[in-house]
Image 1 (spheres, rainbow, N blue to C red):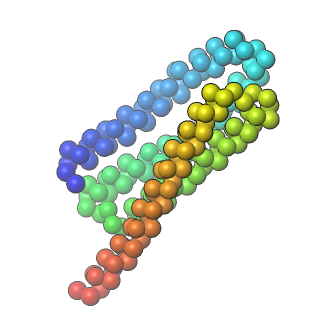
Image 2: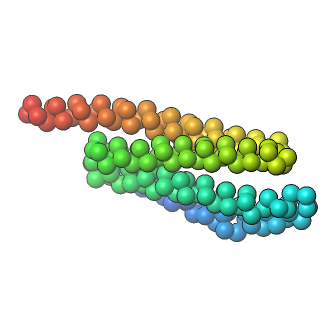
Length: 158
């Protein structure tokens, strides 16, 4: 893979991480305060929803970090190693963690009679995107295991 392509992918991962961090720190609390003032009947959900969203940032950043690790391994020509396999496993489980947290969050909103269709649609979209990432990382991980086995057999025959 070309050096400029790896650098652009690394820059985009860092940029995505910084944008999500900035939104979580500056934009999200202001929106939560505004919504609590506009809808006082749901104001008691403000802190629990913020906590839930902040908790989903943990597996998100684990996944972003491991994506960066994979790019560094590709840069060092060590893409077909167990380290890449481990990073893909972390990405897979991080995606599953995000899916579970959002399912719990949507059910929490529904049981508290606060299940607004727009919020549920955003949550379902995040669940769907995380499912795509989990599926892709699982498939790539399975293929990587086969490639590593073939590479090890090839190294033994030479």
